Image (cartoon, rainbow, N blue to C red):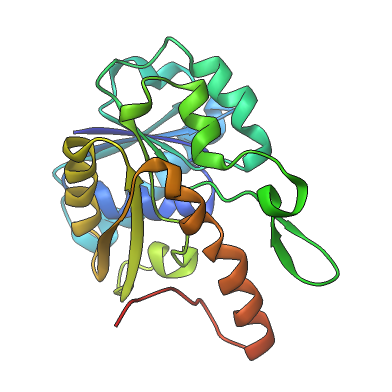
Length: 223
């Protein structure tokens, strides 16, 4: 499987690349193609030091050029970049490419972290992505409350859940298989894409609780 990660030079992108390169060809994306290639070289070095040989690969390119031949696209980008990034991707993805939104519309205020759609009346991230990159059925929402630090640490199991929202059960099943490849991460189906806000809003809640209670690298797990 070919997995493209838009915004792949960030911490989450690094973690996904390191976790999935054991079996898949991962393409790290960035607005700067050279930055993406440099990151891919560093990730590959880390992966081989940890695993030895890897069956997959990690390469780098700009956020747009890799999109015509990938099976899964992870949008590891800020909320405010959705319009620009997805606008440039329109018409460039294969019809069967799965689009994953881990994006959280979040801002920091004096009170703490807040969920932008609730505070400012703006659109949910997953809904924006679905509007920009139809068909809606291929868009899924996941990975909102994952610890970036734990995801990058290949020696560590996440011991957490991730909530998945989407409208197509075949698409959801394929994403669940990818989630199962990440040690200690359990995929839980939350409901259709219209409920993705329920997963997105958990992130500011978790961060506020972590800060006030001095919790390090928190996650969410249903018990």
